[in-house]
Length: 130
Image (cartoon, rainbow, N blue to C red; front, side, top):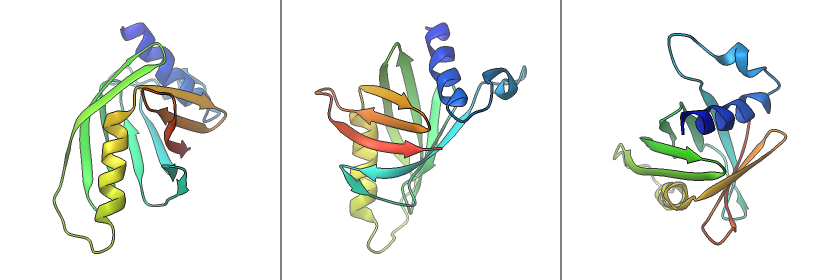
C-alpha cells in the first residue's frame, strides 16, 4: 500500500515537472498542492487541495478543511472531511458541493498537470491543475 501511495504522489509531483526525488524529504512525506478549475463540469476558483501521503487539507473558498486520504492503484478514498464553520455569503453552495465531491471520489487520473477525481460510475467530479 505504501508503494502505491508513493507511485501516486510521485506521478503528481512528476506532473509538476519536478523529479519526485527533489520533493522527498527524509523527515516527512511527499506533498502536493492543486487548485480546482472545474467542479461538476463548471469552472470554479478559490478551491484548493493539499495533501501528503495520508492527509488532505485545503480551502473550500471560505472554510478550511482536512481529512484522511487512502490511495491504492488508481482508487482513492477521501474523508471524512472536517471543516471550519465560518459563514461566507454566496459561497456555501459551492463549498458543500466541493466537499461532497471529494468524499464521493473513487478514482483519479493525472494527465500532464491536470488531476481529475472521478465518481464510482466514472464521471468527472473535480478537475485540478498545478
